[in-house]
Length: 173
Image (cartoon, rainbow, N blue to C red; front, top):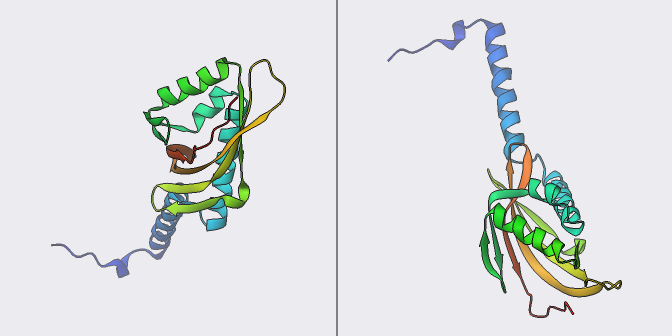
């Protein structure tokens, strides 16, 4: 086994190697997890806001940008749906029916926690509103709970898993 004596290394090269390793470590850390809990919270609030703004306006192109290919959506009444194709088909069918659905996050309920090396979990409560086709008045559908697992990959937040529950009372009439 050959042992290398680092004390004989050119000081300029050793400083360069040190800073290259430091830079690579910082760069990798930023890609896998935001720097602070406050920043993580802001990032998830922003991703959630953009995702549901697209949902609220039937903007399927923007909505798709926030969905993992292998998304799993667990709904207490609807069961399990798997895959971005299914999720997108569901959104497009909902929009095509002509009923307007709008989601509003109750910000005071929002929790965001890091998932080391993966992303974050978002927990909260949201209210859905609907306007049936041919009607003008928006009505409350209900207030429900959710858990969303966000993955940070390729410099972007994508929704990977959703658990939506508490749909005991849905009012869509």
